[in-house]
Every structure is written in structure tokens, then in C-alpha cells.
Length: 92
Image (cartoon, rainbow, N blue to C red; front, side, top):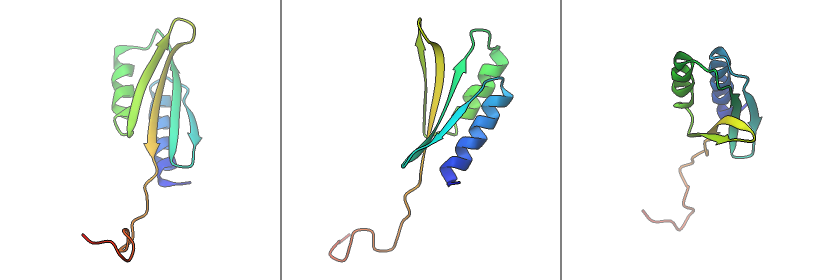
């Protein structure tokens, strides 16, 4: 599992502990975590949820009258760095 996958899994575990049922997906450049948020989520659980998603690179909440509320978070995969990133003709 990639580092972003590990971070996403940890985030999902924290969301699960807050009473949500997260879904994790690995993509080429990032991992995503989504969870449906019930209307009955307590204030304390909301605090736990917000603390958890603060570790993500991006997060948000989509709320519609048709589908309810869905929390999402994105954890980007890191790009490996080398000493010759710019190529042989690159000047700094």
C-alpha cells in the first residue's frame, strides 16, 4: 500500500471511530475517502470528523436534498524527487 493509501486508511479508521462508514479508493495520483454523513451526527462526532480530515490534502462536504450529505477527502501521492529533476540542461 502506498503512503497515501496508509494515510487514507488511517483517516478512514478515524472516521469509522466517529460513527461513519468510510469508503477508500486508490487512484493513480491520490487516494480518496468518502463517507455519508447522517443528519443525527453529534457535535462531538463532527469535531472528530473535522480533526480527521484536517490531515488530508483536500476535503469537503457535498450536500443535496436528493442524496443527503457526503464527506470527501483526498490524499495526494508524493512524487519521488531526484538530484537531477530539471534534466541535464536545467539551470537554477
